[in-house]
Length: 126
Image 1 (cartoon, rainbow, N blue to C red):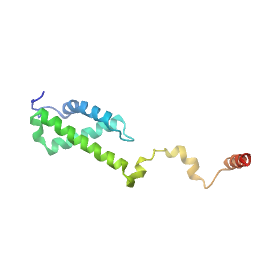
Image 2: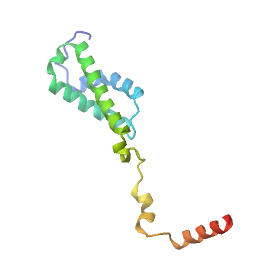
Image 3: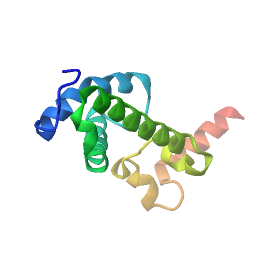
Image 4: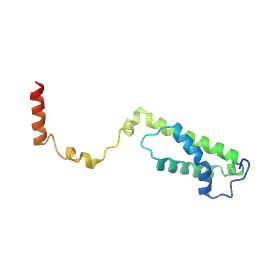
């Protein structure tokens, strides 16, 4: 498949061809909060944009694979830069489900039982 023209293949078939590249880059880079479905979705978007921007790369398989790997790798590096940026520190915080914290959000201050435990612990500390 080295010099085989890929322009007769369907999008799904093209994605199956580049899937090993996606898996290799997934092992190489760690992006927080991305699951395997996110990796696949982002790779498919990147593949679609490559085909849309450079349809000529489908004429030769070697060129196509090199273009996809470069485009997806550069995209991942951009995501990593964004993830590590100090301006976007909130994106790095672990996600907390609101329903698990709703008891603390709805009230102002501590509940009666929490106050009893707090004052008991403070007395023991003293």
